[in-house]
Image (tube, rainbow, N blue to C red; front, top):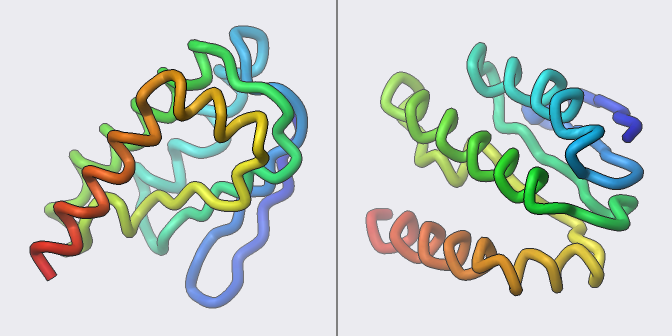
Length: 116
């Protein structure tokens, strides 16, 4: 998996390319988690060029959101505003749907929006 990191518009953009699986998940987490743990701005994870996400990748997403949940009280932001998945490719969207992560993301977003 390859990463391109850019900072702009008060956000960090992490463009991912390749497959997020057991072989790449540690590198993914080591790349993304410091941006959450040392939070300075929202992290946008661009998945446009990710062609596959395994169960290990789903777990990595859940751990990122958990880290954001833990850090959110210090930032004053909702954790869904700290970590944003965008440009999800159709094949990855299908995996997120099958895993149930899409439903969780929708529920968390609805909870955030109801608190606003």
